[in-house]
Image 1 (tube, rainbow, N blue to C red):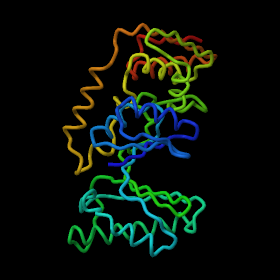
Image 2: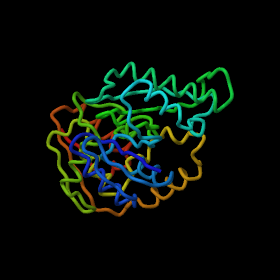
Image 3: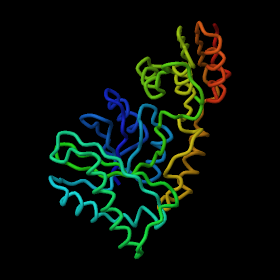
Length: 283
């Protein structure tokens, strides 16, 4: 299967290198917005767990050219959506259109939604779709008339690690902090200092990298509830990630901030991230 690991502009190369470290086949950077790769469900879930700089992991359901609403509708309706979405599944649609003949995101979203509805009613042999079950987010992009239809396996963005429940004003995004730690060549025995630490994100991301803690280990993903994804795969990847934590790493991190409340918050976040004993924060 083909997948996309979406990422912020400038982080495509780091995302691709992380995918190659995971053993992804044919990992390539996109012109903008992430990297593509090939693999099975096991690899896709490993990507959700381990990618430090990516935003989402998306299953590519189809790729085609569309210059009219009719072409878009027919191509989307031809996808076997019943393989992915159960009869009671909820499937919101989100679009992104760039330099194409179809530039109205609201109109293209309506067309795609209608096409999926028609296909699901035919595939499941029903007249109505209640949309009361699990969430299956459909995302698609149209760039220069080339369409990519994708199913979001991550749910919440991958920057939401699960440890930063509160933050100071204008916090750095976790994925960007992880990219800085990567470019700074943080290793198992590194010493990292952040003189303006805020809620501690940069120090925490560096500590997790040094200790080889999977950034997604403390959160859940949308695909864990997908009916077509084998649950045993997710369990196996989590167990593997837990076994690979380097508890003997000699990393030390320290953060400073002028605000005592920020210092307290950073220490709390570090504990939630599982690196509280490797990081200290002071006013």
